[in-house]
Length: 184
Image (tube, rainbow, N blue to C red; front, side):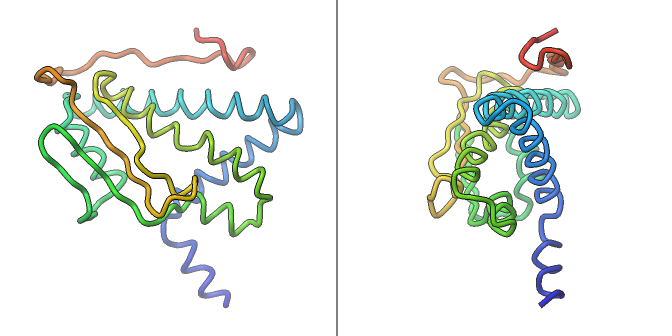
């Protein structure tokens, strides 16, 4: 049984670690300021992290068009995923597992806490795409955390022909430690 549990955690350790760090921060915020403030701050933190990560990845590869986003997404989020759909103007990713949800369920978290965590956690994905290129449209067509059988992320190029931006120089967003909602 212990070996099986270890194998379960060996898959996606990075995602599980991310889930645990977020949970620990959430619990600390909730104990100090209440559930509503934890929800609000958690959403702000995931949005800020997603924006910064998306901007960083666009700068690293030196382009921020939809084709470049597809390359980045497939490399860091869904390597080898054969269910991805690509038309050149639309990129759809399908996932059958949610390691974040699995981790929270393994911990036996109460349903109401899981629902609050799920309501904000995936906003980091939306912010990642926005940070990469705010002109790329993003939507969820399914979220396992919300009870859907699959996670489905949809990214679409803007209506007009999208030209890649060379070396996007989008500045990082800095957030005040004293006032978490304040942007510096």
